[in-house]
Amino acid sequence: MEEFIEIAKKAQENAYVPYSNFKVGAVLITKEGKIYTGCNVENHGIMSICAERVAFTKAISEGERNFTKILVIGDKDYTTPCGYCRQFMSEFVNKEFEIYTVYNGNKTKKYLIEELLPQSFNL
Ligand SMILES: [Zn+2]
Image (tube, rainbow, N blue to C red; front, side):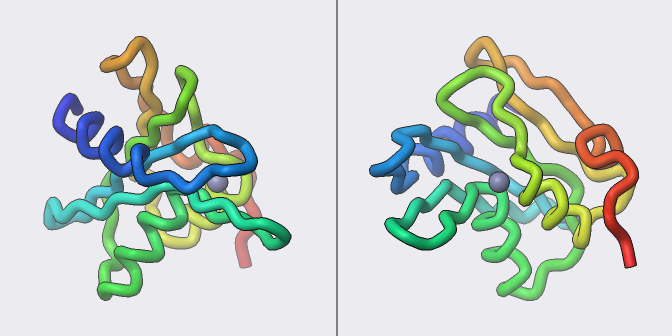
């Protein structure tokens, strides 16, 4: 996890957050071990996009469909995906997909999508 934390921190540095000043970075890992990063990008007037969705949309636009885990790091401990991202991710992940949040600098806590989004909307 240490390696992924460092990669996520680098992505976090690129966050564009003139309104909240709250930087988030994410690193998404595919089944084949490929890595896609994301940072939050805010926008005046229209909906901002979170680091998790940036990572997912980068990967999906490159043809990726199988993901094993995502690690999210924010300016405070235990930054977890927002409700929008939880629903968004649920479209592309299975029950084994792992969601990691970071605390105390280099410690991680793991969640499964079911824990973060119980009884999710599903067609
Ligand atoms: Zn979000």
